[in-house]
Length: 188
Ligand code: GAR
Image 1 (cartoon, rainbow, N blue to C red):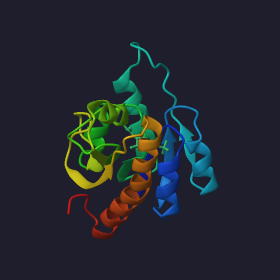
Image 2 (image 1 turned 90 degrees about the vertical axis):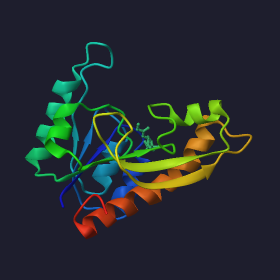
Image 3 (image 1 turned 180 degrees about the vertical axis):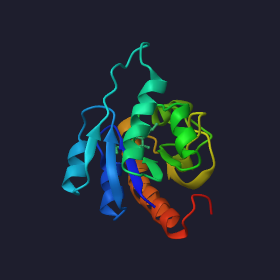
């Protein structure tokens, strides 16, 4: 199963995925970011598919089509979002429906969206965590593949809590991808 990974930021989840031996054909990033260097360090080609806008003029469908073109050019069969911060549109689910994975820093269905860790702290929950799921057109929905809890400490900041959640994501996402590759299907 040929894998393509999408990333946007520091690339620590990407590092864990590639470091665990997930055989990625390509890493696509949506902005200049350290994830590109992480890919290079593992000998995986990184392609910048730059968002032309972060404002209301952003054409999400056209952007998604560009990403799908890059994935299909490399015959990617399984897409793994490893800290990818652009919400994608219908073209990727038309091309890769049921074969797009995402890792999210909360126990879905709680705290969907881009600020899940902050929302967990603001809500005062004592336990949050992370979720690996099949991505669908509805953001942070779709079948849950793996989930693990992380305790919230009284003195946690968004940064300290997010880092402890990421420690778990760095184990859970690669393990989930390896299991999918071994059985040859996304859903068990
Ligand atoms: C991870 O916590 C991942 O769950 C989150 O971004 C972080 C990436 O960390 N993704 C999302 O919030 C997607 N909506 P990294 O840049 O250190 O790899």
